[in-house]
Image (cartoon, rainbow, N blue to C red; front, side, top):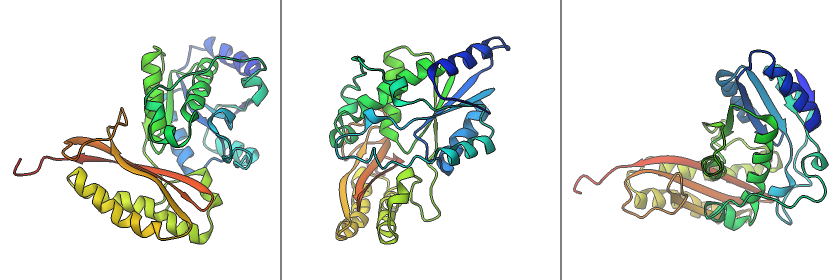
Length: 287
């Protein structure tokens, strides 16, 4: 496994690959603190490419004032061991000054999609995500990139960017990996106390209950039965829980038929968590 710490070092490796039958490069961008969810992305990437590249970079542009950039976990040595064990070929670990040199001015605007839900709660978040992803795509030059579906709106924004800017990279979404109790795996889960962890389970429990329903109205009602109980807990503060179109993230009407994505976000203690599930809403039998 090769470890590169600068754009120049990576560029030299990438150029060398071009001289060896131009292998298909599969890329997994991460912010480190790798867990089984990340490992599932690496495993999927290995089926999609000849060479697997993982980047580890905690992107300051996607954190707003008062968010957890400073305390975001950075166990680099552990992450490198995971990459080694999982057969990653190249790990790219750039510094902030290397990726964002002094004097930079140009960023990516995520548009309307980036202003909804997560974008409304975290202004500028998706602009920061798309800016770093575009830079990393230009540096890594992958043929395919793998993203987790837990960050559903993020993936939708990246898909929109790839289409709108004519980027020549294939995007692959990987299913959410969950803890045994149903909680979606996240690097932020380590911040939860035992009590908070039990309350956080309400997010996935609400989605599980909603997924058994056939209409938007009944799915929303079923989820809120769970979420209303969670909101009685002092450590739980719901941000949003809504059903949206999978690609536009616009809220769907009660009579919506077809696929909808139920997305939820909440702050549990000092930790912000998100989750989602896709539901196929069917017409009422009397319709």
